[in-house]
Length: 266
Image 1 (cartoon, rainbow, N blue to C red):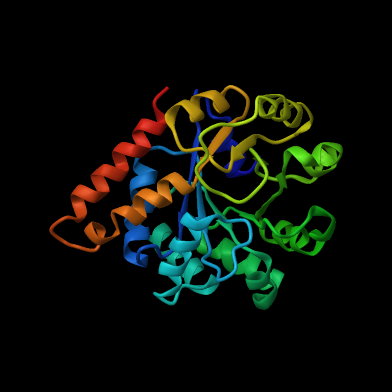
Image 2 (cartoon, rainbow, N blue to C red):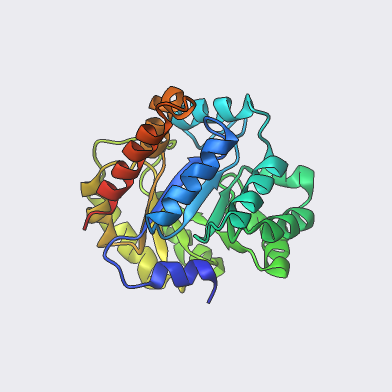
């Protein structure tokens, strides 16, 4: 059992997976946020690689990616940042969320080796279908990295095949479209999650649109973990000036910590 699986099988009513855009609003703040999330006992952290054409992401994460790119963040620098976090004592499992082009440019084998050495535990590539990911899965397996697939409600006839290849966990997409805060979810999502859970040999997690404590509690009954991305990224964006002001930084971090605690409230 990998460290990601172990983290998602620990007894808990709420297992939270926060998403950060690496380098937003700056690399130093991302390191502070990783330490904060580790201290708050989240199950896993998704670390997003900023990308200029993020097809799966809505405006909140696109804007965060733009801010991160302005600091020169790229795949190599995100991996270096993860390595620094590990050297500073961050222990929570880290999953890299990246589009496929940066991985192709680095080369799958070099990427998997470098990521593992940097302390990354798994990778999610939203624009690489499982039917085309054999080379990446092989490289990940060679270097001890979990290749985590996504399934959507429209993937039902492929759920068993996708889950059968999963490592770490299966990422269940709550609804069609891009990432972003949603007010409500279809009642069919619960049945979809139970279906994936029934056939999956690894834990399940749900993401896309989850922003409130009541969302987290609802979906924690039907999945092993809940991913919160845009709501957290939006809060970081709203506090970015304070986060970059030494006189206001601690207060801004305290507000982000309070939001994470509220999400984890059982």
